[in-house]
Image (cartoon, rainbow over all chains, first blue to last red; front, side):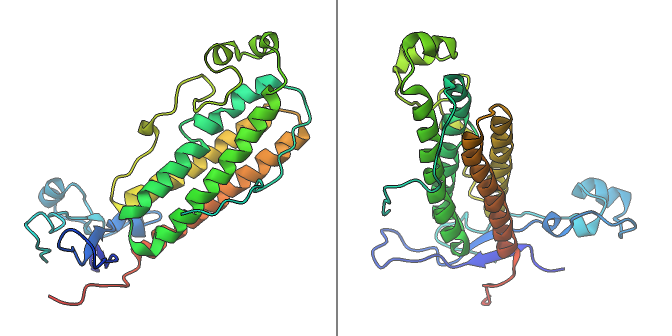
Length: 76
Length: 189
């Protein structure tokens, strides 16, 4: 499964007042690739489906933070 | 910065003396899905959106101001020669009491424009979907405005504006596709 994260590098000015965040990231949730959900897709077990909020692995879009919450560090 | 051309994007002709129509047209001036909201929404979102779509927001946001001028021209033409009595008859008595014949950023019901009409979520997908929705709502508003007049010249200007909403919508949807692409992947780590 491809990553749901996209990255881009914003313009950084030599006159910026703060240390730059060189890479910005954003999520493209998996729903963006499903126009109309096909029948018969693989399914999670009922327990896992309840835990994850969807029955289908192909629609699962986990979000564990963007990674820029810390002090001056973008983690991955 | 902007360079101003002292002409309208598309000619505005109003042939029927119908001040009441001005009351309805003002919806696209200071309403939730109007041109002011559109311009401010896009020009504000550009700062935090990925750089590949900044130019699109600049271009469309700028064009929305050109549309704002067209709506303003329509409203002005319909009201500039009305007497206070005619303003009252046209349902514009409330407006006249507060603004004389000055235009103001409020909707057809007189509710003043508010920044609560627009959003900037920071999430590029969420922001572009907001923009797509705004274009479709503006297109619908133009349809209802076209339905409310039989002035073919006024309709002509409104039909141009409606078509532009359709084009903006497809451009925003193309922008979503651009942001879905996996280019510019972070390679290190």
